[in-house]
Amino acid sequence: MSVIHKDVIIAGGGLAGLTLARQLKQTKPELDILVVERNQFPVPEKTAKVGESTVEIGSRYLTYTLGLREHFSERHLRKHGLRCFFGTPQSDFAQQDELGVSELFGIPTYQIDRGAIENYLHTSVSADGVEVLDGVTTKHLDVSGELKQLTVTNGAREQRFSSRWLIDAAGRQALIKNQLGLQQDSGHKGNALWFRIDKQVKLDDWSSDADWRARIKQAGTRWLSTNHLMGPGYWIWVIPLDNGATSFGMVMDDQALAAGDFSCFEATFAWLQQHHPQCAASIEGARILDYVVINDYSHGCQQMFSDLGWGVTGESGVFADPFYSPGSDFIAFNNTFISELVGDSFSGHDIRLKSRVFESMNQSFFASTLSLYNGEYGGFGDRRMMSLKLVWDYAYYWGVLSLLFFRNAVTDVTLMRSLNPNLREAQALNERVQGEFRQRAKQRIVLPAQGLFMNQFEVPCLKQFSRVLEDDSLDVSHSLANNVALLQRLAAHTIDMLGANPSQQISDDECAVLGDYRRSVLA
Image 1 (cartoon, rainbow, N blue to C red):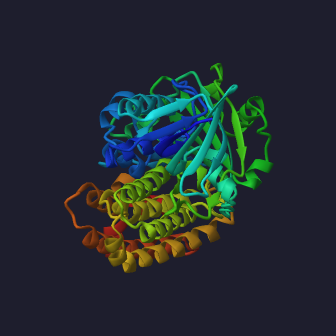
Image 2 (cartoon, rainbow, N blue to C red):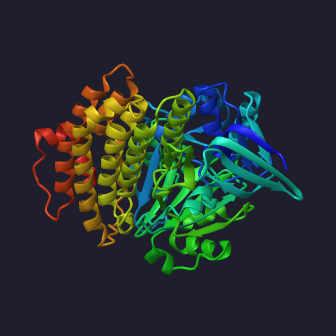
Image 3 (cartoon, rainbow, N blue to C red):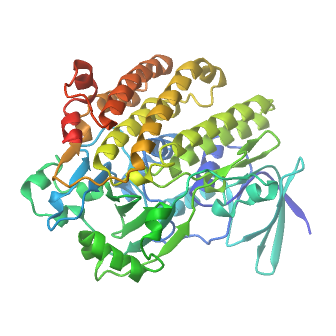
C-alpha cells in the first residue's frame, strides 16, 4: 500500500484540530496539512459537544488571532459574564444571593455552539487548501521516527500517511499520550453530567421582582450570562445557545456526587426538583436532546510539545475543570506554541530551546489553573468565599495570564525571561490566596440567603485590570509590574475578609481596591 506524504497531520478535527489547521495556514500558507476526524461533517448543531462558553483568552484567540469575529457576531451569543446564585432556594428566586455584573466589561466573550463553529471551520480550512478526511478511525500512529506515521480506516478501506509533524487533537482518545505513556494525574477530582433541552430558558423569567430585574442595566439579559446555581461541593450551569436550545450541567466533587443519584436524567431531574425547583420547573415538558455523565474528568500530561516533530493540543493533553470555561484558553495556548514550533522548524530554525521553554510555560499555566479548583469545591456554596474568589481569580487571570496572551508575549522567549521576576511574584501571591480559599472550603459553609447583589462591575481593581487588557498600546513589562503591585494589595484585603474576624474599618487603600464591594461581601 502506498504512503501519502504531508507536511503536517492533525489527528482530530474538532475545535482544537480545526483551529490549529487555520492558524498553521496563517503562519505558513504553503504547508500541506491533513486533518483526520472520526465524525462526518457537517456535525449536528445543539448536541455536537459540551463546552459552549468562552472566556477572554479563548475569545481573543478565536475572534482576533484566527479572524473569526464576523462568524461570532452572526452565529454565537455575546456572553453577559459569569453569574452565581447562592442560598437555600426560596419561593421567589430573587431572594437568593447573586454574584455577577450589572453591566459588561469591555472585552467580549461568547456562548458558542460547538457544532456551528466546527462546521464553519471545516468549510473555511477546506477552502484554504487543508485536506479534511472525515468519517475515519485512527488504526495506528507512530511518532518515533523522523517521519511520523498514521494509518486510518473507513470500513474496509485503509490509508497510510507520513509527515514531518503529527499533532494529536483527538480529545480524550489521547493517541500520543497513550502511545508514549505520558499520562499524569492532575490531583484534582471532579465529576460532571450535562444535557441539552430543545427550549430556550431565560433565567430573567424566574422572578417578577422589579428590583431584582432592575439590577441589570441592559434589561432582560441575565439569561445571556453563564448562570451558576451554587451549592456545597457542586455547581449547576445554565447556558443558552444561539439555536434556541439550552445547555444544563452539574459538576460535583466526590462528596456531592455520593449524596445523590445522577445515573440517569430522571434521577437528576428528581434531585433538581428537591434542591433547585426553579431550575427543574424551567426544564419540565422540554424535549431532552442528550444526557452524558463523566467521572474523574481532570487529567494532566507529562509533555505536550517535542522538537522531534510531535505535539498535543486540547483535551488530548490536559483538562483542568469546566468552571470558568478554560478549555478554549488551553487550545489558544497549545495551538499558538505548536504553530510557532512548526513554522520555525519548516523555516530551518533550531527549535530545541523554544520547545522546552514553551513546555515549561504551558505546564505553569496548567498548574495555575488547577490551583483555582483543587480542594476548593467544598466552598462553592459559600457566598462570602466565592464573592472573594471570583474577584481574585479574575484579577489574576486578567492581570497576568490574559495580559501575556493579548500582548503576544508567550512566544517571545527573551521577553518572557525578563518578565520572570514579576511572574514568580504573581504566582506566589496566587498560591497564598488559593491556600486560604482551600482552608475555608473545608467547612462547606452555606450562608442564609439575604437577596444580596455582589456587583463585580463596581470593583475598582477589576475595572483597572480590564482597562489595561483592552489597551493594546500599553507596554507589557510596565503593565505587568503595575498589575502585580495591585494584586499584592488585593491579596492582603482578600485574606483579611476571609478570616473569622475581618477588620471593622475600611482603609483608604481597601476602598481604592474594592470600593463598596466589601460591604456586600461581609453582609
